[in-house]
Each structure stands twice: as structure tokens, then as C-alpha cells.
Length: 371
Image 1 (cartoon, helix red, strand yellow):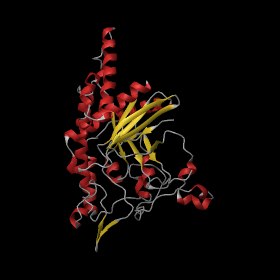
Image 2 (spheres, rainbow, N blue to C red):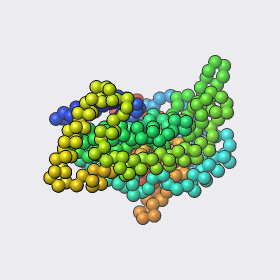
Image 3 (cartoon, rainbow, N blue to C red):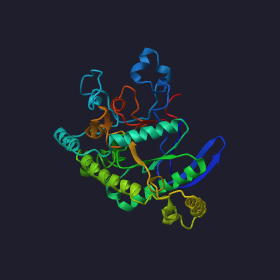
Image 4 (cartoon, rainbow, N blue to C red):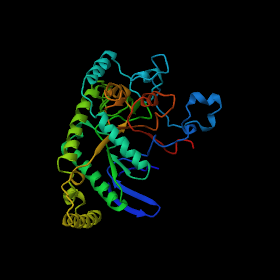
């Protein structure tokens, strides 16, 4: 099986004969995801529409949520990037100006893809090896990105912490680590209630910067479709930074001492990391001495992929492209997508969208899901 690592503030790792145990305390939110590449029992995700057919014993249990968006088109059964509109969509914002929505989607549809089909296929290949015990998947990033928190240093720090963790796992587990950042698209936030109430004032809930703003004012809480365009441009900048760090020399393993974050320099964890780095340095010196070229790309560059929750379907649809070489459809907003706790209904809009794209997919599973 494939273990999806969850991240939260520095690292403590022990390797046991029965497997790998990863305990983290990083400023990254936990994501309890399991890849759809694995064989789950369909009964664990029984849609409500099948309860009357005798499968209610394993019906899906989900948290209380806002009223779902009603399907707007008849369902023909064939998949298309917009076929999700024929299903019931949960956790979807209600926009008050359809003309603005159409213009925002048209703008995104004309923009360049954020990721490319070849990169997605590379991630597929690496995940397939991990499913056969030949790799380990490490995923980390922010609970939700924000427009006003974006800066190069923040992206760099997130990137190098994942590099640190991946290096420790590679050294201790003796297997490659697939590095996936929960960034460059993790903007939308599911909500239990459609409105937030403060005193006598009720306003739409804050659903992430890609939909509305956090300030508690009518203007800020209005669902603004053009926020999707702003999010796209921030994602493009983030991916440019990540690609530069991954292939421009910053990820060179000989720089592993420079990856240490300032805030852990004087901590016990920082001390343990320096001891570990000294061992790796010693190994690199030995490899150089016996003629191994440590300037090779395997030592100086890394593959780094991005992922986010597939929540805001108009945005995902607008960035879906058909690959010219294979004819397959890919959601080019990220390399990997997952469906969240509150949108995983088999007869819902989110799984309808995901069933037609070629990206690696995940689903968030917790104790709210019946066995």
C-alpha cells in the first residue's frame, strides 16, 4: 500500500522493521488522503441515491454542510469537462452575476496550463512504483493559501522543509521519495454553514480567497468570480518559483546544510538534522573519492509536484485541457487532485468531474466514512 504522509512543524522519524513511521509537527495541515489507485470497496462510498436499492447499510456519512447546488443540465452519461454541471454539486459558491462567471471562465480557458500532461504522466509512473513498495509519497503544504501571504520566501521555506524531510526519509528508508506540495492552488475551503453570524449580522461564510475575502463586510464576503483569475496568476508565480528551486541548483544535495530553517537552528531537532547532514556529507565525499559524479542531475535536481483539493469546479473545468499526443483530458491546474470529506458522493458533481481526467486522484477518508 501507499502511505500518504501528513505534515505539521519539525520532524521525528524512526524506521522499524515492519515499515516507516513518520511523526511530524510542521506548520502544514494534516491531509488524510488515500489514493484512488488503490482498490477501495465501493460500498464505503455508497451514494444516497443507492440506499433505496438495498445498499444503505454502507451509506456514506458526511458532516453537515450548506445546501448543494442543483444540477443545471440533463445527464446523458457521457463525460465532458462540464458534465459535472448535470450532477448535484456540494460546497459550491453561489454567484450573483452569471455574466461575471462566464467572463472569468472564458479568461481562464484562454490562459496557458499551469502544469503539463508529461509532468502528470511522470508523477503517475512514480506513484505506480510506490504502490509496489519502490517509493514513498511525501505531501505537505498550507491548509489554505491566501493572496496577502504570498511571497518568495514563504514558497522557498515550504519547499526546503519538504526537501529536508524527503532526504531524511530517503536516507533512512533506502528508497526514493515522491515530493508533492500542497500549494499553487490550495485556495478553496469547504464550510459547514453557508453563512457566518456575528451578533445580529449574517454574511456568507469565508470560502477561501479564490471565492471571497476574509474581512467581515458585505463587500469582502461577496463571491467574486474574478478571484479565480487572481488565484491563477498567483499559482503561475508559485510554480515558476518552485521549478526554479527544483532545477536551478537550490535542491543540490551538497547544499543540505543550507536547507536548515533559521527557527530550528538552536533547537534539538536542528541539532539532530545537522548530525544527519554530516553523515550525508561523509557519504558524498566517499562517493566522489570512488569516482561518482555528484554533479549529475540525480544529485542536483529534484522532481517536485503540486496538488490541491478539487473543490471549485468552474476553476478546474476552465483549466482542463486535452493532451494533443494521447487525446486524454488533464486538469492542468495541478499534477494531482483529491476529493474532500464533504464532496465525495459517488453520484455528486466532484467525482463526476474527476472520473474523466487523467491526473492521479485521491480521496480524503476519515472516521466519518463507514467501513
